[in-house]
Length: 184
Image (cartoon, rainbow, N blue to C red; front, side):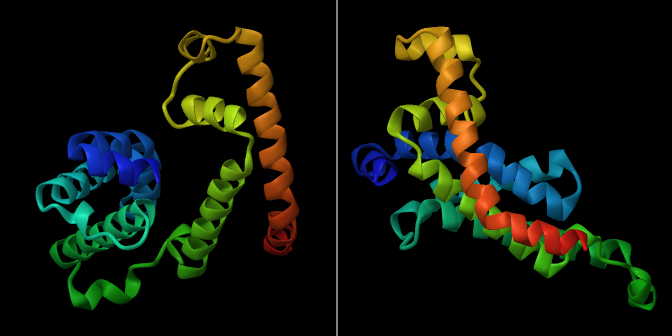
């Protein structure tokens, strides 16, 4: 809702918010496909550039997050396909192996886990969620968060600790069985 309202009032503000919130998670997502941080950053930047330049934000019917993750994933696939054509002839294609983390079931599990973490974050109380997002996604230090929100350093520590405990509890409850199955 906040993003849609930001886009309605000022497109540049909306793009800036999207970039701040999703740039790092998108880069982390893409690097799994291209195995290079620099290439992942280029792909994500290019997707944001096209998203803004072509006015795609106005036509997104799903969430912006879903659109961006899909767009960077497809861009990463396109990049990998171009690299394969350039670097590998068909006679050697049978010897190219897919890394375990690139297997479709691993990708799906990662995306499911990511969605579960996002949903768990959304269930946190507003103050905890805000402190958690400022620290984890915006990369702010506890002292910066305390100054910006006008609360004590200890309150920020306490909010982060409570948020982490709650997220662990929620994720553990859902994913413990899956992790146990993977290790056996």
